[in-house]
Image 1: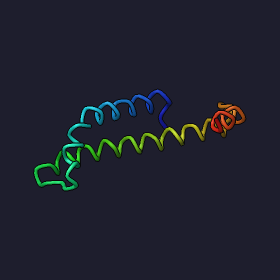
Image 2: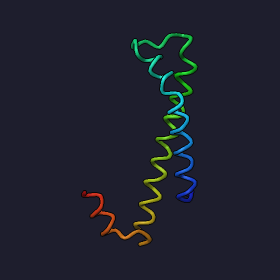
Image 3: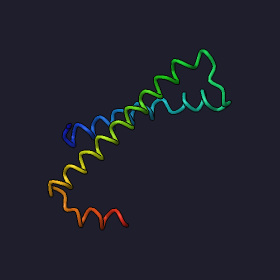
Image 4: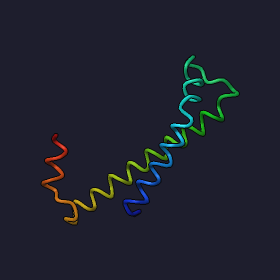
Length: 83
């Protein structure tokens, strides 16, 4: 299990990469067809999006562990989530 700072830094790195590739993703997908010369870029962007997904899961697991151990106040957490 990674610590919170590692999880957040990993997520920010992937988000920054995707942000830089946002225009390329729009170019690739705008016509609804991924051409042969676009496949490589599309796969690289897809891989970064997968990293974000994995990092989100890691963050959820981290939070669940901290809630279960009492390191995060579960009542305050649940109250804040309802807002």
